[in-house]
Each structure stands twice: as C-alpha cells, then as structure tokens.
Amino acid sequence: MANEAAHAEHDKMRVVECPKCDTPREVLPVTVLRPGDEALAILFAGKLNVVACAHCGASFSLDVPVLFRDDETRHLIYFLPLDNPDKWRDAEKQMGELTGKVFADEPDLDPPTCRLTFRRSDFIEKIAILLRDLDDRVVEYIKYQLLHHPGEGFDLDPVRQRLLFDFSREEDENLAFLVYDRETNQPTARTHLPMDTYREIADMLLGNKSLEQELSQLFPGAYVSVERLAN
Image (cartoon, rainbow, N blue to C red; front, top):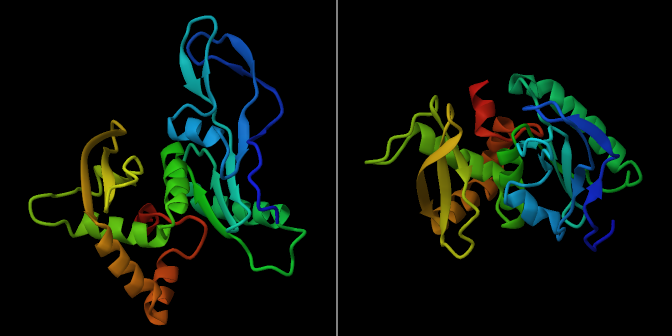
C-alpha cells in the first residue's frame, strides 16, 4: 500500500439545483480523502462540498458519499448520507462490498478497519479520533457512560442530547465533548474528562481479552456509535 498521502480525489462533474431558487449549477464534489490532503482542513471547517448559488447566494451542502482512507494504518471511514439512519444495517452491507472492492488486490493482508457514518459531523469526528490516535470504540463507550451515568452537577439526556468529540483543543490534556441538542443540532455545552482517565479505561478494555470481546460485541460492525446501542 502506498505510504505517501495522495491528493483529494474528485467524483465526476455533476449538475445540482439550488434548493432555494432551483438554479442549476455544475459542481465537482470531493469523494475521497486521505491523510495530508488540504481538503481535510476544509472538511473540519465544515465547508467541504458546500456550494454557493451564483444566482441567490444561498449555500448548501452536497449530499454525496465521501470516503476517507488511510492506507498506512489500513482504515476506511465512509460517510453515507441517509434520510433514515435506522437503515444502518443495510448500509453496513454496502460498506462490506465497498471494502472488498477497495482492497481486492490485497487478499493476503488483514482486512482494514472500517467505520460507517451517516452525519457529516460524525464523519469529521471519526477522522479526528483516528488522527489523534484514539480508539473510537473506547470513545463511544465513554459517551455511553457520560450520557447514562452522568457525574454530579452535570446531567445529560440521551433522548434530547448527543455528544461529539471536541477536536479543537489539540494541546488539552482532557478528552472533551461538545453537547449537541438533537432538535436544533447546535452545541449547548461542553463536558470533559482527564485524558489519563481515557487511558485507564482504554487499558482496561483493550488489555483484557474478555473485556475487549465484550467491547467488540457492543460494536460488532462498521457502524461504531453509541447510537447503535439504542437500536
């Protein structure tokens, strides 16, 4: 597998209509990202595949699948926009087919680690967690504990709120999360725990075969999310 980062790859040119004024426009969406791509910074800024209408000035996101692939660490993270995220089981099957195609020329190597996301924010989060050398299964386990067993003075409601890894503070020795309101999809608060606590939990879960097996049973497929535990 190639070790050097490649440039972001584009899909074929397509015509889209502005959702506000229906003006058509040709666009060239980015569909594949790799470590080191300049487009990653655009993604993290929330502007990747965002189009501004030349007629009315409205901005809108292109609902196109995007794949992040790290050939060196053998990770695939796939963003598949879905109108109904409850269809994640079918999407996992599609992810398996995609993985087989991407790595069809490497039958003697271990299969890559695959992750499936349905929201743009979750896609960004998975990439940020990988680039920070964290284990996303442990992060999701911690989210579950915070949502269902909150500490004193900070109550979270898993029905109304969800947590996203806060990657904006690289030097912070905390594992931080933004608390999002599900209805407005806007951050309303921030919570965190010491990074040492993350390391202790990771050592406990990943250093014990029995506990690691339980973790794999909680997140058995490509859709590794605390949301899965509610379905």
